[in-house]
Amino acid sequence: MRRFGCYYMKTSMAEKLRIGITCYPTFGGSGVVATELGIQLAELGHEVHFISSRLPARLRRHTLADVSFHEVNTYNYALFQHAPYTLALAAKMADVAEHFHLDLLHVHYAIPHAISAHLAGEMLGGRVKIVTTLHGTDITLVGNDPSLHRITRFAINQANAVTTVSRWLADQTAAQFQPEVPVTVVPNFVDPEEFHPQLGEDWAGKHYACPGHPHLIHVSNFRPVKRAPDAVLVLAEVLKHHDAHLLMVGDGPDLPQAMQLARELGLNGRVTFMGNREDVAYLLAVCDVALLPSASESFGLSALEAMACGCAVIASDIGGLPELVRDGRDGYLCPVGDIIGMAGHVVDLLTNADKLAHIKADARRRAETEFSPAAMVPRYLEIYRSVLAPAQEGAHGG
Image 1 (cartoon, one colour):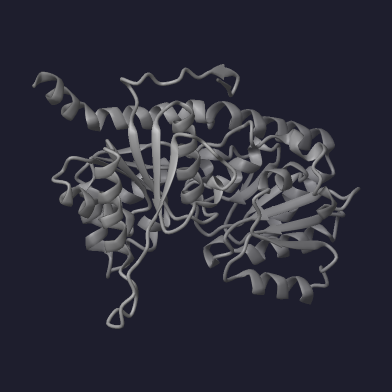
Image 2 (spheres, one colour):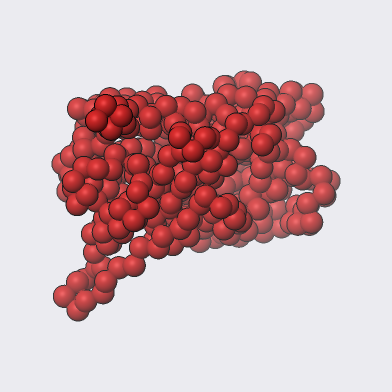
């Protein structure tokens, strides 16, 4: 099969791995990356089993022979105030691993997935290996809460291999949890054939955009850490100097606040709130600038997807974003909350067509070469084979 400008060779039967992947099935970055990784592995000929509470959002449009989905059902009982999902997940992991002879479980997000994987491994007598990928708030927010810190550290240390999506997150993990296992950085990736600038040329849904207006876009889960209302404030400042329209994509707790702010500022005709969408790539492709005013980002997958679609990115200078967005080359980085600074960069780009075109081209080029599946999937496969090597050598030696 031909992908990403090179040829991928199908895996031979002798090299074929059976991999269980667990992630949150939402539109969030950890679930998206886990799903895309599974799809890429299946296209290489590996057998992939998703184990989750419901079908992952990005898996809905794929029908691959080597991809299976196993739904986790929780048991409700009057004594349980909350259904014991962690235990139900562990039991399902063990059942799937045993029935399909899985080589390893790759869990994304520490809580509770890494704990469930450990329990599954214990039930199976250690016959299945565990790879844990840390994505951000599982380390900086959820796992670092005093009530969960100890069990998060325990879960990390039970894995056969641990990865993080940025060097910044690896440093945070080391500082907060002092892991006893090595931590490998494998950045997030984007499929440049699914996310590319040409998508916007003949997209049937481009009537959501406003012809003749430059477009800004914000894509997130609208949690407070994303500071989604700041994108509305940036637009308000931009409109003092230049025409523009803002697409707000996603849903979450801060959506009502962002909508109310737009009404108070009289921006209803300049902002379109679109909710969760499966056609995000098309929306990005019709936009010029992506706004990420987050208070914290371990990597910034929405920034990478925007870059792949030829968007300039204006983001907060925090977390793992500086490892992705090169200030002045793929976009600009500003201090958190710097509405005036972000708006100034937007206006500068919208009033300088050559600069905007150059930055958009650089962003696309960086995404498709340095953060493609062809660059990252082999790194995961190398990790898989490294944790399986002792067992494979022992089997061969016997």
